Structure formats: structure tokens, C-alpha cells
Length: 144
Image (cartoon, rainbow, N blue to C red):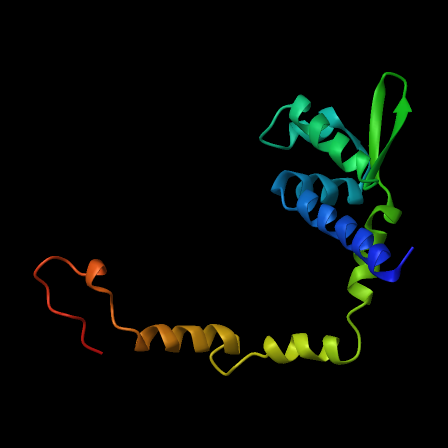
């Protein structure tokens, strides 16, 4: 298999993990399971959704190999599987050398506590006059 196809498959896996963690409940569930294995019922007691919704989230996480379930009698106790994050860890490890140095440079803090890009955006917006549609009818143009 060509390197580009292998890289694309790995990247799709990373995007799938980002999509899974894009839902706040799944992120909370993962964090709680990382602390201690729990059943869906135990998780549901601490969340604003029912057990069935928790089970649905757990099934998606189980399919992505982020969690695994072990049977304890009639109950299924879920726990985090460390290997589930390996595609994301591998992807993050690819940012070395110049790429790693570029991220802190873009996010370097200024004296105001804002990032350079946020400050630049704010200053740029201050230079742009308000559009005619954003003014009240009959009002004068905004003065800087």
C-alpha cells in the first residue's frame, strides 16, 4: 500500500476520534471511566441523560476501541482501553521539529494576555467601518 493511502487511513481514524470526543457527554463519560470503571447505570446517575442514552454513547466508544466492557453477573462494567487513543497519540507525535515550534510561535502570549492572532483580529475589526445594514435607520455613520 502506498504511503499516502496508509496516511489517509490513519488520518481518518484520528478524525473519527475527534468526532467522537466532539460530543460533550462522550468526553465526560471517557473522563469518568478513566478514573474508575463503571456500569452504564452508575454513569447515568451522574449525567443529565438516561441509562439508554449512556449505553448508546458507550457502544460508539466501544466500536472505536476507546472503552471495553467486562461482564460482572448481569452487569457490564466499562473501562477505558489505553490503546484506543493510539491513533491520536501517533498523529500528535508527528508534529516535531519546525512544526512543533510553529504552534507556540502562533500562540505566543502578548502583554495583554491575548494571543497575537486575537489581538490582530480585534485591531483589524476596529478599522472596518460598520456596514449600512448594521446601523439603525437615520443614524449617522460610526466615527472611529
